[in-house]
Length: 359
Image (tube, rainbow, N blue to C red; front, side):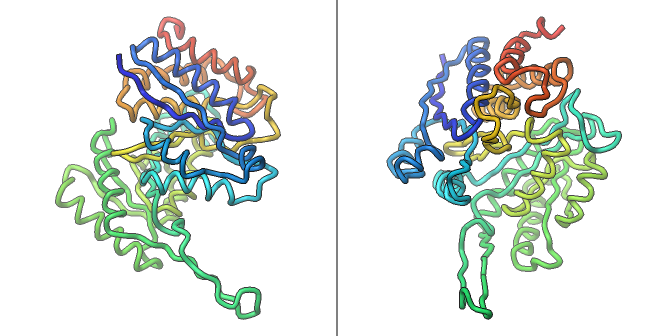
């Protein structure tokens, strides 16, 4: 029997609540498909930082390298200054474990309210591949004359041929394997202004595509146009590939058109190493312990995790169950307005794993 070692980082606020429901679904689907999950929990997050001053000790980071995958709840604590946990935990994990792909499926599930007029599930079904280890997020830069009228702040976007190429190759391969008739990869950039970084991206995009992926249609859109078309004609997109900063921005817009943070999941991928999966939404501390937060994004993150581990049938079963829950059971995705509590939604997804229960 296959067994997967999973590091569980429930995190802050409502993170533990949604992760509990994700683990409930993982346990149920693993029994149905004959594999085991070996879980180890870590108390990384705001409470640990408040008690110990530690964010991510090197000893724990080294332990995490030994797992098959990481399942993350949410990071963010009202008593911890912004940036400490994000840089010290999330970015440190992404960079140290070389999770150089941020993968964001954007799919409108049946029954979910979409803010776009007349758009249906068949219109919103694309994926964003975001470079996750370079760009503006490397933290390079400096202040000159800080605190004076002549102050200058410099922030560097560092893009390497190696980093860009491995991201592009992942995106081309993903587009090739994706079950879509479009077979189109769109590079999202800003070639008319960012003439160094996106000159590199655009050259590599066309060189790699022409040589190794002639079956994939290549397209380009400026980031501002991408945002416009994502709202006006989301059905145009199949797979979008972009840099770290633009990817961060457009995936939040994408989450809104698929129904909100309550359904959006993402993966931080190292194709040759340890990947990490998480709901996109924050820790929502005001809802902590009230059994009202929506766990579907965390459950979908678990589904992505299984897909990346190669458990495709189990992952597909979770997705079908979530679709059934959104179409037939929930009144809304919003916290406190679902018609069910957090734990009850998890129970519904477990029930819906059985196709007979969905009829």
